[in-house]
Image (cartoon, rainbow, N blue to C red; front, top):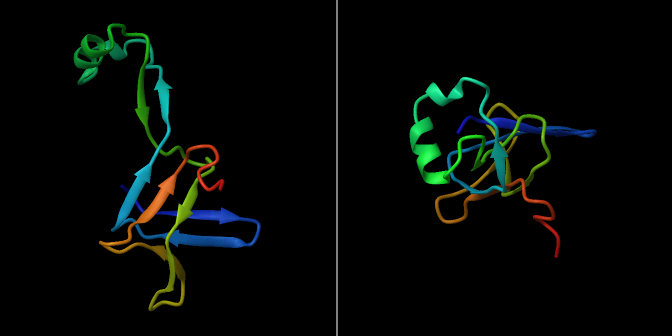
Length: 100
């Protein structure tokens, strides 16, 4: 996983991805025409029973996410959201992830 930022109208925070738990929603993936020849396409087709699409969980650039963790100031003064081995940062793109 690559490090990323979360942004809103008040600014941006760096997200440290060393200790992360992902809670991602599954979504359909529609391979481009001719993708039947890409690595793994035969496995996907065999396991799904069809070749027109499959499902996977992923974070999409510029999409909404909920992130929970600890806010720490780095040595360079920037604020970062971090997790620990015992309390990982949680990143979710599920609708209503933080609803009570």
